[in-house]
Length: 251
Image (tube, rainbow, N blue to C red; front, side, top):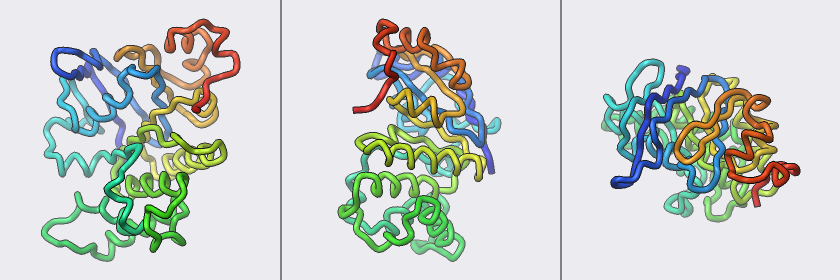
């Protein structure tokens, strides 16, 4: 099942303060959409609202199905959200951590059936983790751990996958490997993938669709060639164009 994510007039706030203000955008299936913006622009807030962790005004839908009409468990069959960290999983094995993602598909059973176990195996294989399935997550490298979290999102079997800074704290080769794998999986499985990035150069290389978020509002959307221009990036980050000459990169 593929799913086009549509965001219409979305408003999200903490108390009286609106962090996301009237945002309208779309994320096409089968492509990697990258979300860029300065610190405090509302990127993580947007992902939390889409996931249902924050109340929001406006409309969120997947293939015309309103997410507001769904229970939390039903929503988890449409959207998988991959956080930056998940310390509660560290003492589990890789397989156990990934298998938790099948919970939204269980009824009264506490054990995975053959189909659900196969979904876990496929996610492990897709992220090149099969050989590490029995390892404790706490023993993994940063890149391996990041792949476990993404595999968990894939095992959830949803048409939409949200990634909050999937390349954070990784070395340059690991960043590129993660985004290459994610983009390939999006195309192969017709997934709608929305990933928060801080590295403009990585977005240029791997993004197929881009959303620029400035102070809770959509500044621009479209292909990288049209959105990742010096002029738009200078406005996005409130800086002089010369500071962008070397491109953006994560520390």
